[in-house]
Image (cartoon, rainbow, N blue to C red):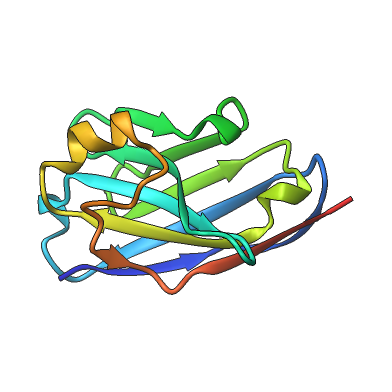
Length: 132
């Protein structure tokens, strides 16, 4: 099974930018169908932020981050990135990367990008704090 390790979180002022990284190690990385970034803000449920389909690199975003966040993967397909621009205080949360091996994720993330259904491998999270 894959192991995921996030990094890159921190504190930034509103309007600033951060890049989160998620390194995948061990396991059958090539068998992953979907990679995603999720976040959990204090007192709120976990929500999907961005998804990347490993076959073809199609990407999907939840409405609140469209135009501001970009999900991508390095050429070796071992590191997932989330470039966050125009950060807002409401983006403050613990951010997690996750992997899905089941192909059902491919159609599901397009319909419900906020959901974490089909994702069953998770990193430990990295904290992002955005202040005014």
